[in-house]
Length: 365
Image (cartoon, rainbow, N blue to C red; front, side, top):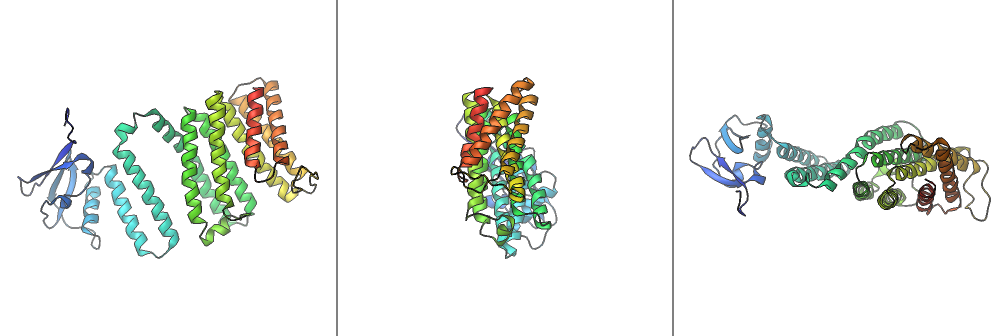
């Protein structure tokens, strides 16, 4: 009620008995009348109507479901459901399905679905308040842009991995290219650096536990060939952490939104090119006391070229730089980034390469 500390309420009306009413908190409107002690009659259904939960005669449906499940589904069939009811019905059905199937993977998928539905219900329930917070809506937009591109790509790449004999390193580097490319796109379309960095942190916090759970499954070993236990999840954790850091520094501290995207794209595509060329074609190893002896001139050349082209494209098309200036900046960043990758131990190049590229771009642009 306006002007008081009492929660907003709606009335639950029992049309079959006319006078029976009971106050129910607004946030509980999708709940069912039986929870509040209202008498039930055979064949009753519930529907939302003008802010009220009304009761009308209707035949019982879906034999085998519980009373609660029937009543939620009646709301859907009545055509009067809202987003809360849809989410509740979906969660009930998915949970019921998972309980009938003795399969760990199905249980994991169902758990993920229920988590997403729970988060969606919370957001919907408090949307009037959350939508007034710019950082929340901006972060949601960033995360949505990333998911809109990465999820279909991930589905395609996983299908290719299981249906073909593509080498594991090729699959991993294709995933890296997709992740880095869509991260750069997310940066370019974002409204603030805070939202972009927060979206990266959220992605990191979601992906790490999922991979931690999935790596216990037999199919995970077929999907990824790890250099050491937990290597994939640690790699993804560091990638999103470094992306968030570069965004915070390049865009947040120096107001260079486009340069942060350029640095991410140069790092990701260059690293992937080094592996895709160097592993199958790298016959000439870089022999130096400053290198590990595993990297090749072919792979380093591929990284230099692809990093340069990626950076040049962003600087010319997004930054609108003069061609000569763009070539100079992209060339210097690509060269020093390749050198950092060549001379850094493999466990540290996830940090040294992007920092080097970003620093050079900030100095020269």
